Figure 1 (cartoon, one colour):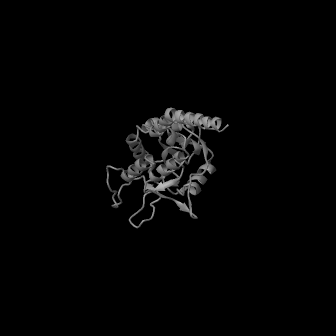
Figure 2 (cartoon, rainbow, N blue to C red):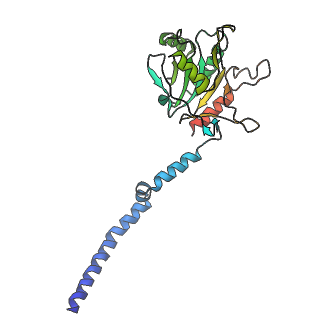
Figure 3 (tube, rainbow, N blue to C red):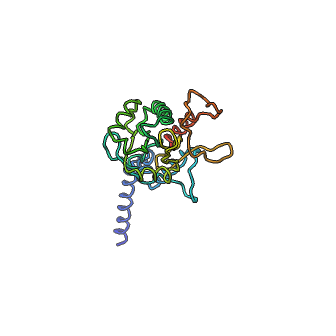
Length: 251
């Protein structure tokens, strides 16, 4: 009886030995090639999140009540008659402006500056511009299309949008804090900010900090880069806008 038991143990030990000789080298080989560690381990998600965080630039968020301000929901019609909303810009870095096609003063300067920015990032599919007209009764999709062609707007992610006037003004004044108003006393009949807002891939308003450590929030769009400074000695900000777009594209 004891001899049979011993033979059983010997048989089991032999099977274990054969298994080890055949399969353990294969397991070690898979580990060495990262087949198990990288593809079958939950650590993949952790490392991805860490890598994403490490790619964050030094650009600040616009904080309102201790919350990073995100682009509000919007939905308008672009120059091609397509409906464009805020989700169409997710995953893209983009610049926001408010303008109107019959503007006789600052809008032509702003859009020539933006076309220059467009050319700087023409090879980036995840860069865009959002231009909202403040005279939607005049700026139909057809009018916006002609305006885009006249200024050389070619980026497929540059949407010139029109829609309900009250929604556009609310988006400007509350959504982006970019002042917009009707004013019969000024040339063109409207007042609006000459600043640009910069938005990251997740839809947050971002900017660099000033010399005192405070976010500049917006970028002056009224002085051409080639001019350097205006007649009042105010420096152009198109250069720093380009630099900060590049930073966000790398995030």
